[in-house]
Length: 149
Image (cartoon, rainbow, N blue to C red; front, side, top):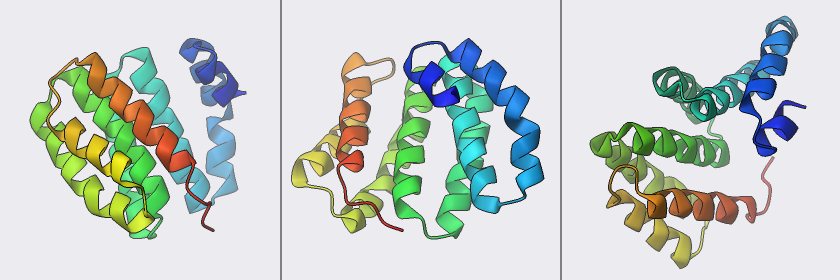
């Protein structure tokens, strides 16, 4: 339900449901579920405009996925993080995040167009609509990759 409300453009409702379910995530005591919850919380906070809190949740999720060698998840969370930095106007952090993503995208086997878009994103200016489109394009390319278990 949270995802449906997020995709439906209703982050407030999504966040309300997420908060109600938060205790279930903790009770489950599975580290991957906790990481996915942190990631989702970061997305929700970003969509609600709480960018610093979103940054914190997304950094935590990205670090946890990285420690477990889950490169696909690291790549997708990094795109979410890049969108936060873009909205904050923090171009240096955006560039660092993108630079960290290049080897991950390469190891995932993304095509040359996606790598070119990633490099173009590294040069993006703050609040640039084209940069947000590049992030959406890269996310779509990652979704096309074969799923890895």
